[in-house]
Image (cartoon, rainbow over all chains, first blue to last red; front, side, top):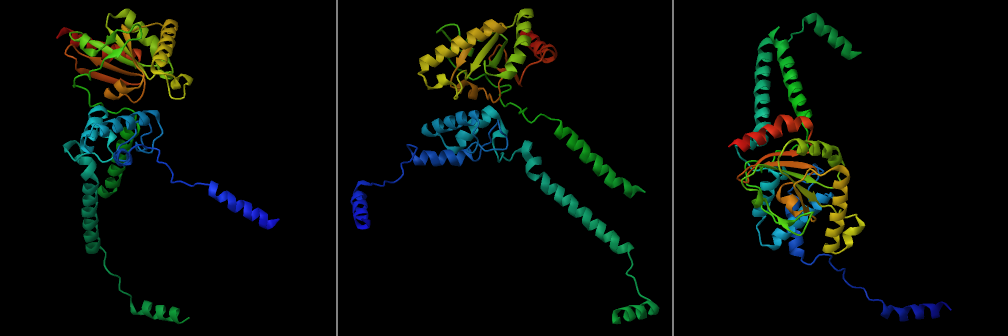
Length: 149
Length: 192
């Protein structure tokens, strides 16, 4: 009985064809570019999500738009420029470095520098005012006594 | 004594910074389209198969309002627009934005059927709530919306005689906004 079963199963093996998973997209290169570009773009509806991860409807539409632009042989920069011209610098996760965004790019470093200067000045002043304490003979004797115990 | 004030100044500086930052509406994104030519398009209208394009409005100051029957904020805005259109003779062009949403049963139909369903639904809605629009154009796939940087319906634009976008507002317009900003702007533009 057992062997008949195994035999039948072995017969069935020929009927099963496994195939490579079919890609859902027509053009993998186009899709890779879409993912690459849309990771750099912000979804305007859920503002903390990138265009590639957002499931908002507008994100779908914008991805379709980007896909069309890829098909029209536009460069990444041209595609980003188009979206910036419509939605502003806000769509870019990494805004361009220009006078308007200087504060954004360099502000933190300026703050760090100021904080560093303050710290330095503070430490210098402290060193000048705080005298190192010297123990008297009496105190030293007591410390030794305590450590022995 | 002076040293005590330094952290205090810092603290208040921070408070002021946060107070400004937290009171701003993160949905208000400054539009790069202000001062730029209104993107061209050519779409069929709600009323007929005649198409509308912004070129036809050259020489006029007009309002461009993005709406949809599924949009909740539009319902709030609509009576304000209707009252405004009754009182002031300014052309308001509506953009019926993506009337057929993806989850809509009609979404699977052909484009012709979708257009018909969208027209019927929008016309009924305007009949019920009043129609402030000179004409409404049908942007079923939302492409014109993207051209205008639409990301939240309703949105309102003011476009001048030369076809340049002069103002944009995201969200429902209020009587106050109309009276204090949009109307004076339109009147000013009308004079020039």
